[in-house]
Image (cartoon, rainbow, N blue to C red; front, side, top):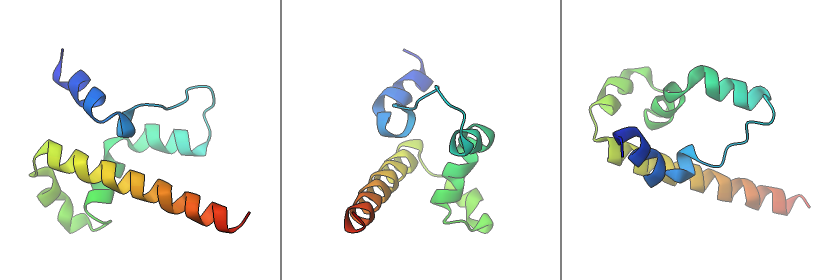
Length: 84
């Protein structure tokens, strides 16, 4: 199994489950910016931190991204639930 495949399998919450049926704005944004949006998130939008982030261990970065994604999804569900 190749390195890329192992990472995709280990971090399914980051790389799996996408739908290729429609190319909406969010899908287009993700395709256009790819990994840069992950660097943006890990650097908290501060361009001066991007170099530091790229020196981190890949698993450290993926763990943080997985945490951030799940946290954001839970918060979005809570907000949606409040407005029902």
